[in-house]
Amino acid sequence: MLPTFATHEHLRALSGAVNAEDRKALRLGAAESVKRVHLLKSEERIDWFADKRQGAEEIRALIEFKTTWHPVGA
Image (tube, rainbow, N blue to C red; front, side, top):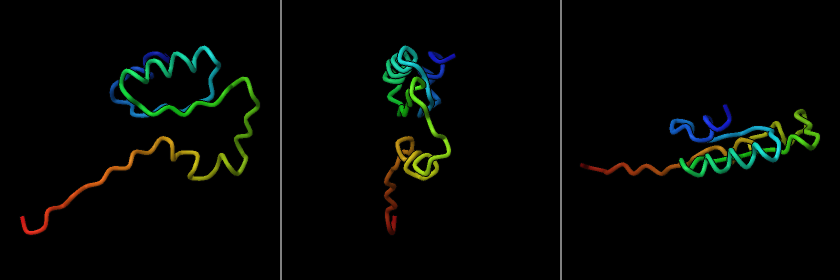
């Protein structure tokens, strides 16, 4: 399923904890559709309850900011 997620055009970002082989496959697939990728190494211990995993910084890499211009008087 990982290659499908990586190349799916309607998904705009990927986040997860995966091994080295899957990280490479996800990054290569994500490059085709220019999506954001935030991957953790599953080989390392991940403390999901740590303060740094609970804040807004953890999702900031997955958020897209856009500027919208509203013409005045048009």
